[in-house]
Length: 85
Ligand SMILES: [Zn+2]
Image: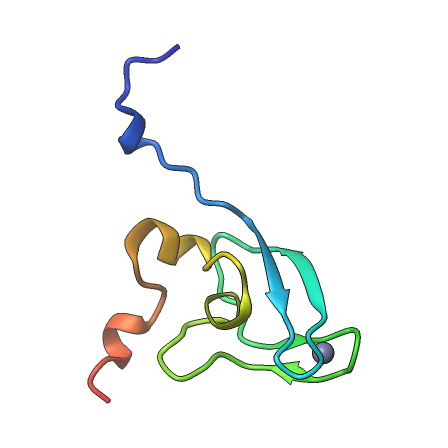
């Protein structure tokens, strides 16, 4: 037991299930906590997935769980500078 508040120690989920928009195949992938995955190749159909407009990584666009930085802060690396369009 610890005395820290439960809401102050959120641990992001690091496994996301990517659904391929082309063939519908689902892939459970472990997400890096310190980097974004911008390209993901579907091993079922060979399609290379890239994030949708406004998303920082393929997990945010196609995963069942957004990437860890988004889970914690609601945004991801580079997003603050890229806003405006
Ligand atoms: Zn696919």
